[in-house]
Image (cartoon, rainbow, N blue to C red; front, side):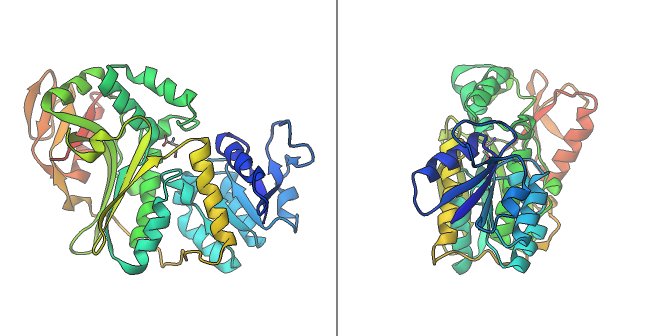
Length: 378
Ligand code: HSE
């Protein structure tokens, strides 16, 4: 297998280092705008040098972002090259188009590293789909926010201080808003839903609340109430077949398994009608864990036993009025929900539908931009 590698950043250099030790997969060309020592003769700034090289059979995209990654994906597959990526924003945004292009071109399109980094989560969802009906997917899928929540809880550190630590360690997105506002997690949830439920979910339709406005005082209040806070994704197939999905900070009993997940680790689950709950734990980000998942995809393409991705992937609306829960709310705005006071502008709401809480919180945020809320899971 001959690879054209797009992007020699954190994950790209991880993939490169792993592949340099193998004899069956060779990195033939690398696209990057920087001069990089050790790549003489292989480095190019022109995508066409990869596209038009008939010896390159597979393109690996690790640039991130929507463009030019999306254009490169479509052009690579239309040119008959297999395509592997870790770009969850691009895959979740253009899911049905990329599936169609891969199908029409008769090439493999793989993106296991998009959810859970080195954890074989999407691979096992595909396996489950062959023999089971998936009822629920979700969990902790963002390492940066887990590091922030865990460290704030265990050391009393400030939000900004821990965010800088995650950036230094190479976990945070280039623009960490994608982590702390939940956009990274919602891309991962939409990809998981598409494979689990054979749908095509618009990530922007998933109600998403982040942790940008979490204060030290909130974390102290959670502990006093006996809760730990984790940043969770959740999608459920309801009894009538409709789907609900949301991404939000969530208060869990300190005994919950998710509450024990520390540092930047991920814990991602699915529930099957037959299999029951399965949980996958490990490193969801970083140079080698994510690089490793990309290499696994390449080996799957080479091997005889690849799992088919085929599905209808029909666009589907969400039904978020079907799930209700109580919320922790801290705001100085006049309340537009029924709630009991916990003191100091903190409240516990009466159970209300998830979609309704997200819209009401946005209304209150106009009067109080620092508003923070979190679901409460008993
Ligand atoms: N920024 C992401 C995280 C990287 O922190 O989990 C892995 O997708």
